[in-house]
Amino acid sequence: MTSKVEETAAVTEGLGYEQARDELIDVVRRLEAGGTTLEESLALWERGEELAKVCRRWLEGARARLDAALAEEEGDGRDTGGGKGGRADREAEGEE
Image (cartoon, rainbow, N blue to C red):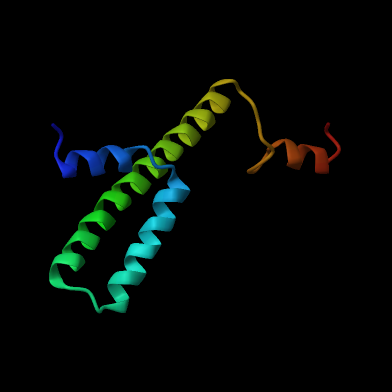
């Protein structure tokens, strides 16, 4: 038999970034509004912490994918046109 904490963690892990972010916003609103018992507030806080971790993992994963894509592009010798001497600069000077 699994515990309530394990079940909640499993459900949280399956959330997409937008779902977790939206639920986290709702949790923050409820905490800021007040009117909850200490026990309810603690439960909301814990849920918010779980949701923040999910968002952080999604964002870290996105950063890693961007970094990998940029490194691959750099390794291929491709030029995206940015920076001094890039393709956009050469095109503006009539070199391409």
